[in-house]
Image (cartoon, rainbow, N blue to C red; front, side, top):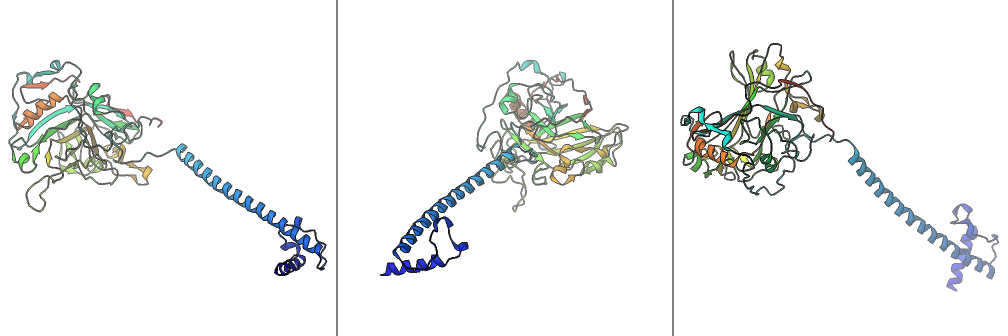
Length: 444
């Protein structure tokens, strides 16, 4: 009786329902007479079965459409990813990049001997075999040498290893084979040098100087020196727990940090040096150019920290080195995290001002922050230096043991033991060439 009542209600509902409320007109074939008969019941049951099929069909359609929507979303995501891969990308500017050593900063590199005869590259110091003078006045040992300017390129084997053309324009010194793919092993294996002779196949590079007229302004020369307290001194027993030489394969950046906009390591200053030099130091090129006359050099000087944590690199290529400070004790100490003292690396780069030059227009390639929405910073603001060690291991041991640890003042690549590195570069205190067009950045 209950089923009959339900069918009665359904019959009334279906018969009375307007066409707009019907789920599917194809299922309705009743004439609309409101008469309760077995035929009506039969037709209603047929209509119910028909509507159930329609509902099932539409549910399947909806499920298929949902799958289609999901697939479309996946397709869109894949296309956006592909577009991102194909679109031109502005290279990131900064010091942070995955280093050659990966995350194994504790890795120790075995020294690689020179693959050429060493004896012909040595000579008696200053022609007589004289021993260098004492460096006791400064209380440090020092080893100094000069370099000419080398290649100019958009490579940076520390910040962008294996990515040629990714960096701002650099002026290289030292190993002439240095490029984006350089490693300690590759530098030791080949390359003439602009730093005295191939006993030093290290690579040094800084932002290129631009003259504001479409040219690279190459420096006349580059002076490099290493200084450290000698073994047995307070600098090696109190300030630091021990002293060592330059670690094999050390890599570092010091000076302005392109990521933070600060100079956490490597103090930088500009000077006017020459016949009518001006005393004092200056913060940037416009400041020094305003007082420095033709015939003088505009120079930039920077020095690395000396406290070392025993690692050849760090994620930002700076944090493995630190400065000693007086802290809470009032006594100069290396940080506990960086207890080893190594020779501080200092440099001075010389740019000669000639009549007709407009040094107030000079700026570094890294000063141009236009791509980052910062415009161009005052010339010289972003000076920094990169260094990759590739010294002949015996030569490095010799100048460390004599010039540094015997507290001598060694100049002109004097090794401190009566021998001196013979210059094979034809060094003459001049740039060759002085100006060159800014090169076109290679496709990356």
